[in-house]
Length: 282
Image 1: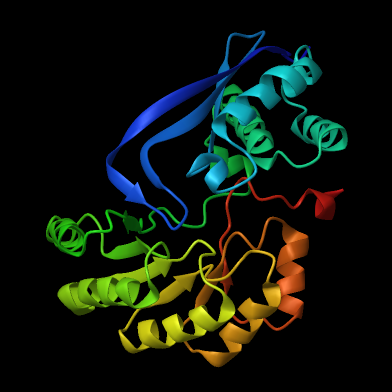
Image 2: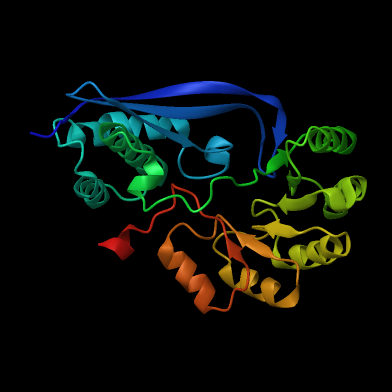
């Protein structure tokens, strides 16, 4: 007889950032994470996690709402159910609850972690095997202070920890942001890749001007320059510049990805475990 889910605990954990983390919509000093602890009747425990930067300033789910959704709506549906029946439990949650992708992702991750521990195999094996044994990790420079960001980048390069950097911009006047980014790129030169994340802060006209300046400064990529719903702007900007665009907030699931690609978008898409492709698997 297979083990069943015995308990599900959603715990809020406040983690201070190493410095103020400045985004286009807010400045963060603390990152609140939702840690899910799922135990089965065999005594094994699976861990899941949900994080949203900036809380409700960023998206429709907050850490507090994720915890409430799991405690009030998800846990009653899952307790006592076979812990290894992951797809059935996923379909059940998707049928009973619209949206709430972060909460669903935390539960799904805990289920997968529990299954990996039950089988004593790494999770990558359950998903078809690892493609890479090592990948470079990008570091976000988000103090908003040019000199501090340059010092931080150069120290990380010297320590051989990181050579790919992302800058959070969009809260200041366009040319102030451009000068900030261009100065950092000039300081690190060819020793590092520099990308920017605008977090939807620009309209299309501002984005066109900003991307022209950033392209000239040698920036390697611009993430989500325009509002998430304005897919047509992303398409036009990707056609206008050779500077790559990364669509993030604009793509929440496989349907969004298909719509953007079919419209002619020539950029890339940010994949996250909280983004859904459920309707393609059903």
